[in-house]
Image (cartoon, rainbow, N blue to C red; front, side, top):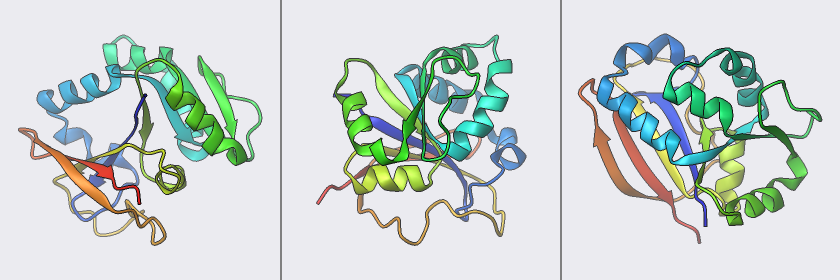
Length: 182
């Protein structure tokens, strides 16, 4: 069965907004190799509406490297209760918000590689709450931001088990956690 992996960038003090402003200078070659391996191990991208809309504007014009080329060709699923038609981003499909559990359960049972989701938000909370999220990959960047959007919301309580730690030359650390299903 395919795994759903949530990959999220956060500052040391736990904020996730505007990663393009604080993460880029810490993306060492070994970290980028890790990101590429993670991404190539997935053949689908599952995104919440807000992330999907932002990425659908930016990513179609990116390319010319293995990471962007892979992201632009794999299946993309946007979960939304308000968007009916997918953006003009290849292989995009809308999953109605009220069908999340059944549709992700179907996706996980289909043959293929793992399913990647970017960030931590309502989508990852709902996936974890329904036992559909298999792994968090939390990328902690050596930056203290002081304020912003927190990595987790107050109602996202999910017990987890640390399964791996990866440290890169730049000081970025990836903590891999598996949610503990009660």
